[in-house]
Image 1 (cartoon, rainbow, N blue to C red):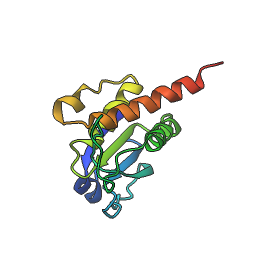
Image 2 (spheres, one colour):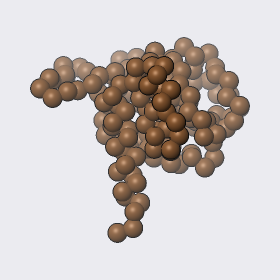
Image 3 (cartoon, rainbow, N blue to C red):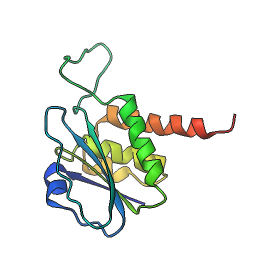
Length: 147
């Protein structure tokens, strides 16, 4: 499986993917949902809204700032697991394609045992988002282990 990152403008204008694919669409809560072009090969889209925020100990975010939730990270995990057998590419986009989407892409890559280093080398992934998604995959793995 391939993991691809892009920005809002690219996803709205249409992207070239040479296999069946799914899109994880991330936008700011105060923006309209992006128009993902319905092209051949597109199987499904997961729309999420959260800010590019990284909560840290001792610092409280303003109430209007909405960081990623564990529920959203679980949605990503479930979406990937649902489509993993039937698609060749996962496209992840956010507003600029520089922080949230590379973080999600890197976490998915790690969970699927793919090489996600390029996302750290070419972008500035949001560490909080990365850990939220990585933890969701870890929780999902634990839930599937026989008791």
